[in-house]
Image: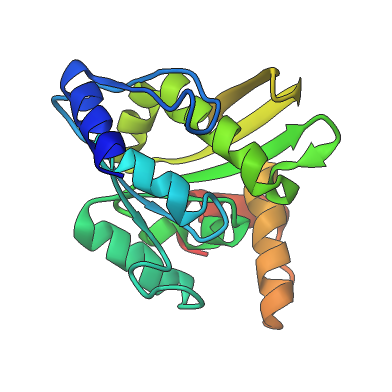
Length: 205
């Protein structure tokens, strides 16, 4: 453990996190001058992998902060209070995006024929660091401009995958909002689709 900590310390100085030989992940370049503050929900990565990022990323987990099973509003408020991006694979947070002032990144997509939410811990230990490696600047934009974004995973296998960060479409916002309220048993009276999309974009739903 001491040797690993020393290695991470050296890599932080160089701005590079070397996970190869630990999880089979290639070097990840992250500027050492600025840590990206993140809250990860409990379904993204396990604590062992999160620990490897602490030296170069300011990462906290929902479970670590005792926020598991708390209301989405409470998790968002804690992320806002700490100035952190909320990184999650739970689309229900899209229904709360109007109150977010910290940025939300929803991980989605597929690897082969398996959805991201169904990936094993081993698979996530490879693809999630790939997101930090290739889209650091876009993640900083999510933080700096309080954006709500999808990170979409695609590819055939662990040797052939990529991430795309983009805003959710109006259709996606509507679909996931309806899914959320149906699950909560509080589906409101029907609203004209155009009005519903407009209110979703304004953060009033």
